[in-house]
Image (cartoon, rainbow, N blue to C red; front, side):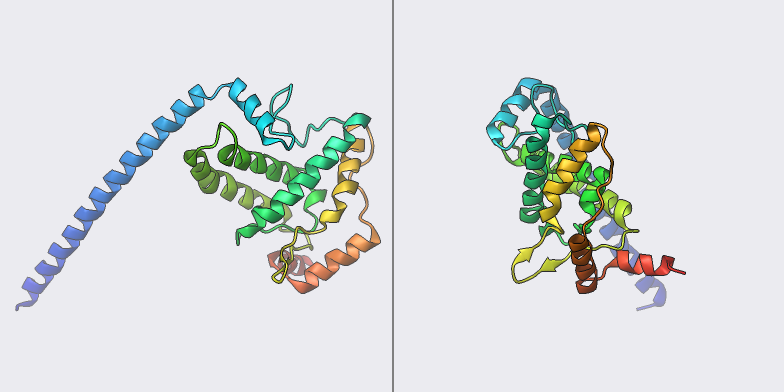
Length: 233
């Protein structure tokens, strides 16, 4: 067979492959278009009443309340609400251990609770997960959106917010994922509530917490430790 014939045959094969890829791309675009329509329809029909009912059904404080969706950054600072703020953070810690840290890219530094913005990111991601999986709002399309958009976005922002820290998460493979310094949740919740009433922030880490953080860094150094070493003179 002449070289020109072989070249022609190769180009014919390439053309057929490109044609199949184009058909598959058209099919994917059609599915995305339909999902977009379904999502917008779902948003239009998902009323505030439904959201309130879902929050009541969840039984763990819910995503809303009398004033609608609750934000960690705007948690009430009155004395009688301190217990609820503490329960919120302890509940978040539980979800992080059960769900969040099961994903390989979900890094969580031991100083995460000292970053209110990081807590807020994890807080809302927790509640969108609950809305996707539980209550009247549960829907596989919301689950897909959580995995494809919500979770990866929070992972990126938590990484960006904490990469300069010299603390890193530690996973004890024998006992499952460990939420770093989760026993400090009560201390941080009380300090945050006090801050919202005019107190100081952030709370000073205790000697025990600093020692635990150092142990975590030594046990499992990550990009945060490497970044910090590069910043040292």
